[in-house]
Length: 287
Image 1 (cartoon, rainbow, N blue to C red):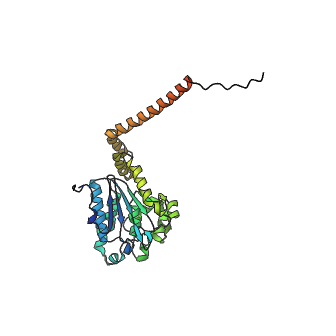
Image 2: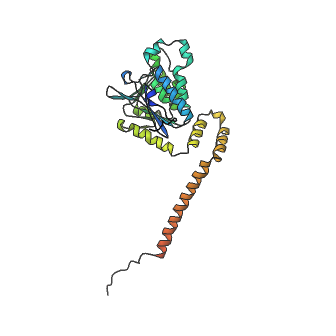
Image 3: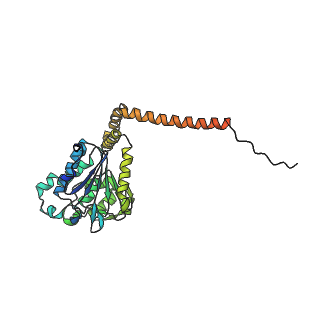
């Protein structure tokens, strides 16, 4: 019996997440269907464990929900029972915001695959991802002000960046819940897929990311998140690092080799056509 791979998480250590991991990606499925995947303290602890792992072993993260009552659901929000009992000190600790910010800063991209409700803390978890894919059943919003609190885990500033001030204020101040098409129209979803195809679409996106140079992807993500005043200096420094990487030379040489091979093939076709021209068409003998 072979020893377990120390670079992989042990799925048995998780109770609120179902973990599936391969060489280039990790899929974490929120799995508390009995409470519609409400985000509780245990789930936050387990999300921290996922982040700690991916900080040391960078790979794409796919987040998805599960089924509840025969319908797909991402996360209905924070666990209201626990949230009701939290006090000032808990808010100052930033229980959810700390975990979501850590997730947003992971080295490689994060893909959120949303089905059904993504509300409150569930929506804020989705906003922290780099990509959001949804199904036609998606309902996404921030109902916190109706409960006497604010969405303090990222929505108050991420939403403005994602969709603009007008729509963000409707969601945050008026409790607007967006459906899939509205979310797509306002840039909150990258694409909408049938529920049966959602995870396949997430993995296809992970495949596309996987075909890029990992270091270039990691640096691009970090530079993208820098404030405007850091540019273009940070871009130049990042490019200087990549200009010295082995992958840059190998990938560019491979591109040049492919282009040279295509050019040679076209030249060979032209030469063959000249050497063996088609017989000229002649009219019939009418004499």
